[in-house]
Length: 381
Image (tube, rainbow, N blue to C red):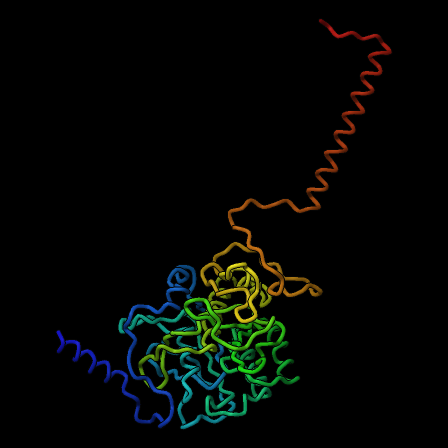
């Protein structure tokens, strides 16, 4: 038995051997995950949603430090050619490793070699590199990020995951975000700041994501009334850069946004007419609330519930231009099976008509009695 286990370990080691061209100091895979599905995967439970949609026809842009599309858990032509705004560190597609990790959470294919699988394996993945990754100490260039968002829209990405937000805002970034949302794209951005807000996470209209551990406690330091929803951000597993393998357990608040981006893609595939505002509204209304049901400054309206978000019978009515964003108001869920309540105006109108009818009947009775008295009518015994 021990020899068989050793043989399996040797074979797996050969499977995840780092390619010769992979640069020293870059992220690399070391082993294949074969443990039971992680708590995060059990929480999302995408297999239930796959009966309805796997996200086919949707393109998810992953904006950050790149994605290694060479990991075999990505399907053939699933990872589109990378659009790089900065050079590749070491000449590799993802030296940092975070982009491949996020992309795996979104779209990794089922494999007999591992229990890990992505949430929306039917999507296309579009990597756009605007920063060198963890070695970049500039905090992210907002101008380059604005260009990356614009390119994602032009490439047809209905869901845009900003895997690496910036620590500074700019008019160009504000304009790019506004234009992307107006064009119909949903921008998903994690709260990863250590001493303040990050961008575009804190910008209006962006689906801002906090991170939680398996106990429901917040993982990240960033907080604010702009955070809409939360997702798993600790003890995670996903695809690794630099070969066929995985990394775990990972604690990364940015990875939480990948779970939400995947849910957005599934929702867009199943509800293709939904607008960005309607999608944000649906996700926040169906999130799993913390005790008390209020909004948490780090976790927003609660943990994403992908299955309920996709399948719930909620109206797709966008708020008016002068109304506050739906996600910012205290949400109230009405069970799908509950009977529809009549509109207030119809109810008032019905009562009014009923009152008029009763008044007319009373008048008719009065006239009849008066005439009967005049003609000395008597009731028959």
